[in-house]
Amino acid sequence: MRTYLGTWQVSPTDGFWTGQDPSSSEAVPASAVRLGITGFDTAQSYGKGRAEQILGKILRRFPDRSFDVDTKIMPTTRSLDDVLRTSLHNLSGVDIDTLYLHWPSGNFDNAELIREISTLKDKGLCRKTGVCNLPLAMLKEFVSSGIVIDRLQRPVSLLWTRDLSETIAFCRNHGIELAAYSPTGMGLLSGKYRKPEDLSDARAGLFCFRPECVGAFHDLLDVIGQTASRHGSTCTAVALAWVRHVEPDILIIGARSTQQLKENLDCGPVLSEQEISDLDLAAFRLENASRSVCENIFSYNW
Image (tube, rainbow, N blue to C red; front, side, top):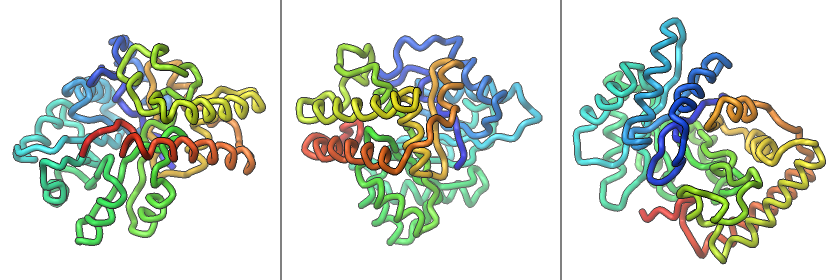
């Protein structure tokens, strides 16, 4: 399992991560490089290109290092060659490893967009074709139609386990890498945020605070907290240890400060089989409650 740094947090986006300290936005990726991280995940939509620009600026300081940099593009009617050039410009010419379709959309031919990304791969403009936030049913449909997908990125955390086991099995059976993002549930599994009023950004509107889900969410936080207490650890460390137990090919961690980065790189406690089972059950109950509320972690409409 490889650990990447995600850059969503370095630039406010769509109401998420407001109040981010600009100096920390540059310090975190620079610290990540010094701590040995060589993989980075970003997107054109993060801060309307600002996250790509910050990352490119930082990586340019290490010309003797080799990095795997992934980025994501939204569905568009523009030529993907032109769209990719925007990212390459933002990243100061850093090569792109995986180019993802960020979100599928009912207003576009998603299959064709993925084929176009594969064309860019054939041209040598990126190394891998990726899809992000693609539902399992759509993933199966595309693969069965002959579309080659090298990597799937999806949320993997105790906060969101919808179709996770089936997705892992499908990816492994078809040679698709799985990249796990938001392993701490966007920080909501830290135990610091039990109600929307505890937050000052768009996370306050997430599904787990809906009346149908909040009871199961609190139960999950309680199980995580009890597990952390037994190990003399933190809720965040337990949440990350659970994702590491799942063993995605790539673990994308986020951090808003260098201290948080160091904490999230800590391997955390070794969870027992019983603890894993207890966490799985609590996550399943939240998953079950969420089914009447939303189709994905952001309640995004396809």
